[in-house]
Amino acid sequence: MTIYALTYTYIDDPETVSKFRPDHRAYLKTLEDRGELLASGPLGEPGPAGGLLIFDVGSLERMQEIVDSDPFGKHGVIAGKTVQSWSLFVGADRFGPWA
Image (cartoon, rainbow, N blue to C red; front, side, top):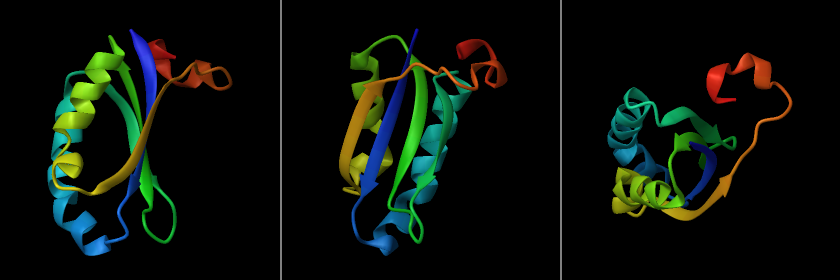
């Protein structure tokens, strides 16, 4: 598997972000339960202005499926996104077998 870092930038509309956050978090929980989502959390204060998500998936195509299925994306909450492969170097011994 390949580790990917996904960074979202949210629209400047906290009400809309908050409205769809429960659906987004429920979706992330399903990905965590499958073992694909390793970690996630908001970026920025006050805010959040976006989010950082770390995945262990088989391909960039799977990453695109994940992004396309995210309720935040479906409801226009995501203003921008980047997906990059990621290799953990410092701290790898603290993060289990995926590191």
